[in-house]
Image (cartoon, rainbow, N blue to C red; front, side):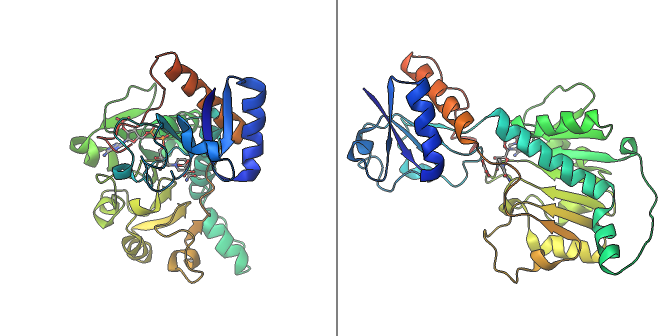
Amino acid sequence: MTLVAYKSDPVRGAVWHEVFRNEAPELTLVDWDGDARARDSAYLVAWQPPAALPEGMPRLEALFCIGAGIDHLPFAEIPAAVHVVRMVDPDLTRSMVEYVVMAILMLHRDMPDYLADQAAGRWQARPVRRAADRRVGIMGLGVMGQAAAVALQAMGFAVRGWSASRKVLDGIACFAGDGERAAFLADIDILVCLLPLTPATRGILDAGLFAGLAPGAGLVNAGRGAHLVEADLLVALDSGRIRAAVLDVLAEEPPMPDHPLLHHPRIIATPHIASATHPAGAARQVIAGIRAHRAGRPIDNLVDRSQGY
Ligand code: NDP
Ligand code: OXD
């Protein structure tokens, strides 16, 4: 019997149990809370592993994180021999694409201005700019960034992207590495951050970066709150260097009710909902990963600990 421990939300857990029961009878999913067998599991599904690894789970072989981002994991406490796998799921990607498209359209079509006009009782048209004349830059051309770039390009935007290693994407200008960062940023009208949070990307959205964009650029951050230097954004908004921002993530979540970013008239903020793991699809990804591992094949979407993502 192969035990798989589940340590997460119990309501969503009901879906996980159903998928495992129906589609993977060779695997036994056991709840971390309430089932003593969980400690003996070879596999763990969790957002956050239990404290005191490896003693707490001496047989652990792989940790499947229920999220695409893994920056919250305490890697120093996870034995090097334990594989760490992040979530890559078509539904998760689709939700992110929806969010990025929504945010880009809101900025492209001046919605922060129209919402302010409406609140003030003003009826005032602004020029309509063509998508083709709007340069959109995506920081992070991974699973999410590539899917968003392709969707935006199909809508006619002038899309470019930036990643650590070079990508080749039809119709999308691809830039790579720190050496090409300034060229990537130059004259961008709307910048989207879909980077993972690592020591190299923490605080990357700062005054220096804003200075490289087109004056009055828009900003979308759906990566992690700590990518953004929040004080620099407030200054850039007040000076007009950044015209408006859509933020799905903040450095501190949940923020205090009086957090200045929540009340700025040129910021649209959402509570980290750009995308979310859908339990049935996620369970299937984990089953596929465990089966690969048990068959001696590599598990997809392994985290590279040396890179931090
Ligand atoms: P991936 O790992 O697939 O992609 C990350 C991309 O960032 C890669 O293209 C990578 O380059 C690039 N990158 C990493 N470090 C650097 C660097 N220093 N310089 C330039 N490029 C860099 O991640 P996903 O697309 O799956 O997810 C991205 C992030 O989105 C997650 O880490 C998470 O933080 C966030 N997220 C947010 C959600 C939300 O609801 N707001 C939901 C899900 C995810 P290369 O390809 O060369 O490795
Ligand atoms: C994730 C997230 O990383 O929801 O999956 O932020």
